[in-house]
Image 1: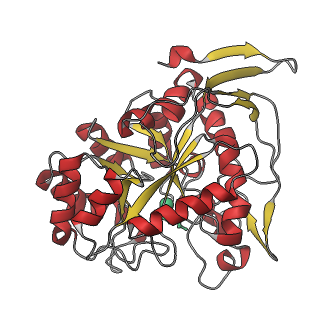
Image 2: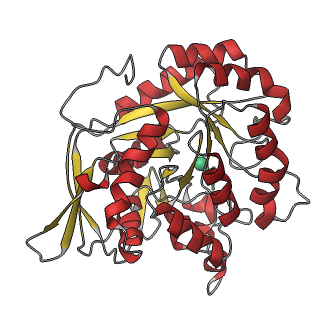
Length: 372
Ligand code: DOR
Ligand code: ZN
């Protein structure tokens, strides 16, 4: 499929690549002033975004998800055709009928499983995964994907081992109990998890963030503590970063974009107990393009960015295109949100790649009915 990608020479003399418009399959947009501030960045890069439901309170009902989708649509910059695709937040008590209803009505396309307490706004998450078997069985039956934040929550488990422990103790047994369930392991950070995805593809897929392709755990402590590089799952050793780069750029259909763009106000990050999350929405595509270029794999970028995820979710790829150019660009160091600001991943740095232009899709979509 990557044969659709066109290499051109642009007037500046650098290489340029035209690919189908990409999708971001893992986005935190928040709400209110934060939503208004960050949405334009994701909407400028991606045609669709799969919106995570960890609001306060979390999105646990069809009505809440439909209302949140309306707020996102209303917050789009004028002229934007960005399409938010919604998820529901699984709790110990959510009813299988509610999950199915939202899916049947086209309000949400997937459900997110946060182990309780695993990350930001996960305290309403699931305390006992086998205990939500009726929900997972229903999802299996209707073909609705389960998106997993795969980290163990036992505070005694070393933070760098939490993904590995979750995979052994929770994910592998879950895959056995629900052999037909489609699963996305979100923001994969270890070489071993990549192998679990591969071994269980195509019903299991994995998303990979730009920051986990560019930083390792040492980056978080380089010259001092760097809170804006702290996210969960936390970046791991260099060998894992290298494995992630190989997987993302390999052309394997089970890996696709999920930026996990996760904005927090500067004060909440630069704090005695700083929040997890990296705001990568403004520099995501430029960063992915750089990684693919460095790995000599630009011909696989379109599959990772624009085709693999759509195929997994059973959606058509976007019809429009985006041109990405090997030309230096810069994004601001931070963006304003009311009287606060959010620090941008790789903000105020020279980026080797730029987004040259995006051409919108050529058909219209009934937002109320969702994608067909
Ligand atoms: O670092 C993270 N931040 N990881 C998550 O899983 C959630 C996210 C957030 O919502 O801030
Ligand atoms: Zn996330």
